[in-house]
Length: 238
Image (cartoon, rainbow, N blue to C red; front, top):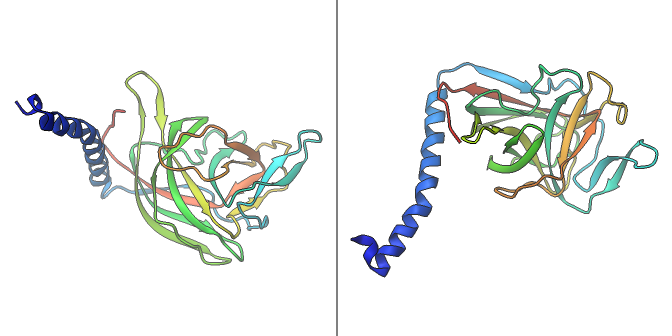
């Protein structure tokens, strides 16, 4: 038999390592094929707010531990990851969470005068606990003071794992290097006013298959990103 020799054992070990990757690749190829011809849905920001907080990844928005007032502190980093958590008091708005299995096909961002390079990322985790990056687009630089549209092809899933845990992908942005982020200050940070935005940030950026749980959530800060999603008919098991 193949595994009866040292060379056979090595070959079998390689096969067992590669097989799960092939299964995962096949699953997402099926999702892409299954989503073709379906109508796209839009989620995220309506992109009407201005980019009025001209900061990059070197500064992090925080609430002062003593006064509770919003402040900016040096992050000591040159990159970060952002995701739209949703709207306070509005459970109908999904923010960054994908509604079903499918494919994210297009992303729009509103930028300020000196935009940083960006990268669309798909984060995997459970609602309220993200997570790790599992897929990413090519980096791109938005056009200054405009809405930039980029086409992507990022399969996403929303499912219940075999042990009963809900696993839902989320759509986020990596900010790469110097330049401003696509965010809008609504002027309500620290008040948690119903109808205002929530944004979660990680410093430095979240990388592939590198679990991160220390994301900081800021109220009154809107991530100016909109994404298009095409639903697939196929169910996916984790």
